[in-house]
Length: 252
Image (cartoon, rainbow, N blue to C red; front, side, top):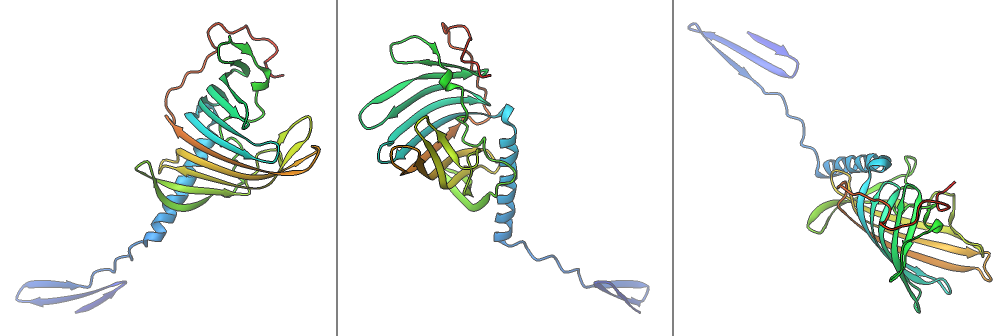
């Protein structure tokens, strides 16, 4: 007797009280292609990174940054080592314009800024109350397309190389506003390296800007390299010991 079923042929042969069943096994699904698996893992890393960015209250990390500003009259190098806990941060910064080196300690906690120059005491610093956080990812929102460029190795660990093209800093195209003029963004490229868990370990921002409103309009190029460590680790930021009581440095 021959019985036909969906996807299987069963042949039953009865002989001498014994029964033998011969069957054709179901075809196994084709193995997933390596490219498909990599693409899926990349999309998962992007989603996990977006989730991490959205949790601004719980974001903690140590940030080292090296920024080079190239322009005819606005050039300089900015270096910083900062502990970041959401909107609060503390650490050291140094700016060199080719002739003068300016360095100091900075703290921003509960929207109150403090600064200390070498050999000096702590003072309140309203200028530190930022319109931009030192967290390089705060301006990323859900509407921006993030692309996965594939797996790479950094410091011995596999990471996903992500990219945002034409990233906007927040206010449509204004990067910095000075009394003398404004730096307008013309184009940007933001590269980010994240683990499988979506935690960033490094980033690089390249931006071209145009200085308007100054004596002359000049192009400006900004190249910033961010290195992140202790991501998600315990970080405590508090007002410096011996600092003045809070007053005018609190933002309205």
